[in-house]
Amino acid sequence: IGWKETNDFPLFIGLSEVENETVLQDLIQSENLREANYDYLIYESLDERKINVGCLYQKDKLNVLNSEPMRVVFKDSFGEKSYTRDILFLETELNNNKLYLFVVHLPSKLDQEVNQVKRRILLQKIKTKIDEILTLNSEANIMLMGDFNDTPTADNIRLELDARISPDEVKNKELYNPMVKLMSYQRGSLVHRKQWMLFDQMLISKGLLNANTN
Image (cartoon, rainbow, N blue to C red):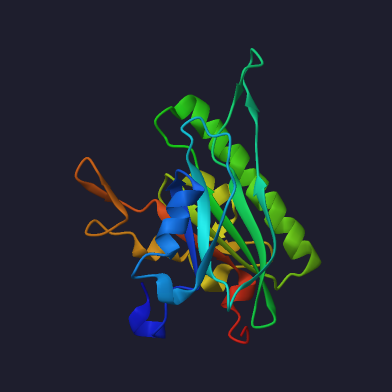
């Protein structure tokens, strides 16, 4: 991925549907990735399907200063608890610049009534954290990535994350979603009922749109 543009491996890879740490160990030691000198991060969530989000990163280029799982415990009207994947948050340093990264895997749309509420709460939690970072530094470099189980134009992504479809429209505490322009009937990241869908997305802060950012 991106080899033609950079002549290098990806600096950072967000992963979803990760079953355990052993999978990531095997992956970074595989023949095709060994030269990249990747390390990985994963936290075991309380997800009912026992799957997690994780990441790979080039440890000689990206310095991880802090990482944590952002967890939400849901309760229904009877007090019964339920869980989904954690949000993986990292505070890193790249070329003496801070870079904040979020890796997500939102609940699916199969159970609309329940999961739609969960999705909204998770997106609100992400946005609160992003706003905290941008309050301290309005030009902070932030990237949010993962499987959103929805398209880039979905109302919950657009409204809860204050996402804009053009970089010129992005103001303070808003995000740019370049994936909107990638949507097409001919391509996507998955096919559902013979229709292309784009659920895997990346959103970035205004700071990463700044041409002066190294």
